[in-house]
Amino acid sequence: MAETNFSGPLLVTRAFASITQPNGGGHILNARSALSWPADRTPYSASKPT
Image (cartoon, rainbow, N blue to C red):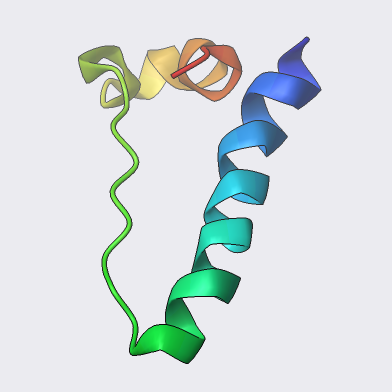
């Protein structure tokens, strides 16, 4: 599950980027949990689904 939660947003972002670039670009925003900022929350943040 951790690999899916970690790789999923990356793969979706890459897919959308490949579509938007030929059409003039755009912006992609990945929203994450506020708990991703504290240093001791890195494992939680990396495996938390968005």
